[in-house]
Image 1 (tube, helix red, strand yellow):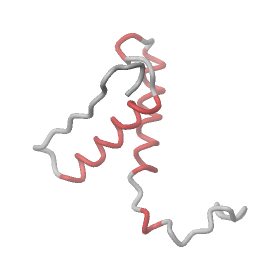
Image 2 (cartoon, one colour):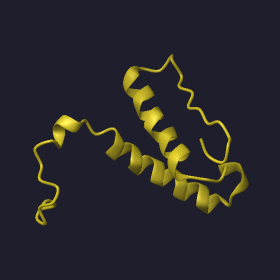
Image 3 (cartoon, helix red, strand yellow):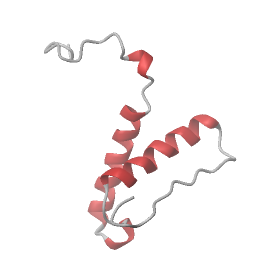
Length: 79
């Protein structure tokens, strides 16, 4: 809830589960990270928000069992 306004994420139940999951995380990014409706912004900002949502989706949907054994405080984690 932001500014007293209700927000919801509606998923297309006809889509396969994996696509619903991707759609959910994409829309979740818009709900938690983007404050302005895309229809009221310049196209370049719209593109920036869509790119941000795609990147957010990649990280948010990563299964935790894939990263549980990593030491995230290790400075050489990227290597």
